[in-house]
Length: 182
Image (tube, rainbow, N blue to C red; front, side):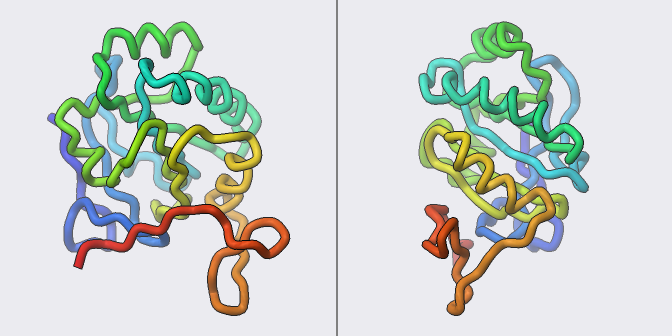
């Protein structure tokens, strides 16, 4: 059974906002193992909504493999959430690339709705405390990966005088902020 789980510190499941607890994900992985996002607390986590029929998803897969190796000492974890595609082709693709991270199928869209996914690929950068720090809609580049990874790996987020997050050179970072429903 798939169900979004209540985020720690949240009175309702499925609320999504930057700097708030990420919605929980609990279910069974494509290889039949029980999975709960809460089990990764204490590690920086990237939740990636993808599917093998999505060309940009396929193109960014090697980046995840490389960054998992590069940031292994930090405990980086990637969690895949399969959307719109059948599990069999996804498993074939995962095995072809030698990916080791868990992927949970989302056939009914409960996780997609909880995370307010707009398109594939879409990645959520969650810090060691389970707090959502950044959202990437579309394929990640190496530079965007590293910029957003710095937000969850234990580094501090830079802010300008008005309190807005800033990217390199003090310019506003191209991240999405989604307020919770009122």
